[in-house]
Length: 262
Image 1 (cartoon, helix red, strand yellow):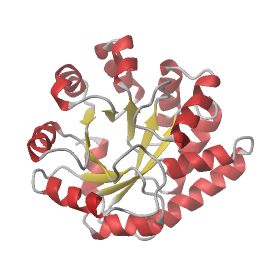
Image 2: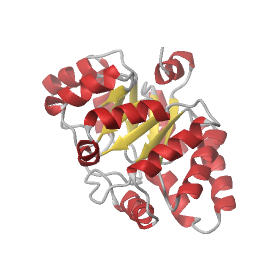
Image 3: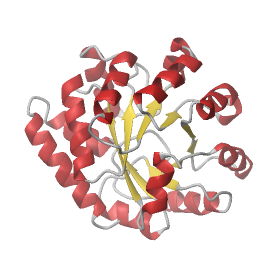
Image 4: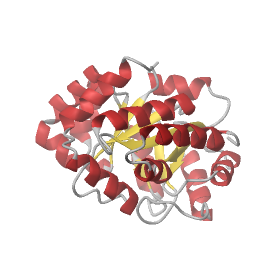
């Protein structure tokens, strides 16, 4: 049983999945941010690999990618960050990446290095299931969970195809649009959760726009196995550039508040 599967098997509440951009605003501070999330109670850590054209992401994460790239963050840097984290924590680590950087490095090489660094799962934001054969087989070969997105506009037929390849958890997109803080959890998100639940027993995690304890409670009450928070966390990092200690305190406090109603 892998680390991600173990988390979901052992929890009696939804998992809190926290996202931050690797290398934002620099390598050392991003490590401190990741460890603060974990110390605050994050069950699974998602690390975004900074990319120049993150089409699924809104302004908050785009700016974090820009900060990380400006600081010189590369794929090699991100692997170094994971290796550093692995010396201090056994919390599952998931990459959120775009296909260009994987293809450029070489699929086999990327997944082998990810495995060696201690990565547990990889989600490729712009990889449709119909084009995922190579990465799917390579991920399984190296013992890495291939994680897929499902949106509110995904047909039932495609949900079945995606669910058949799902490992670790399925990332259900709670909004129509890109990442970013929202005021409410839409009825469409809950409908999506119920639609996908009929197709698979793989854990289902809702993300995009989840930012408040009320949001987390709505997702929990609806039966989500996990809630994913990205932009609200990245915003805390961005507000505290230059004051890592304040950033750490705020991140720990935020995760604790979010988990209280799960």
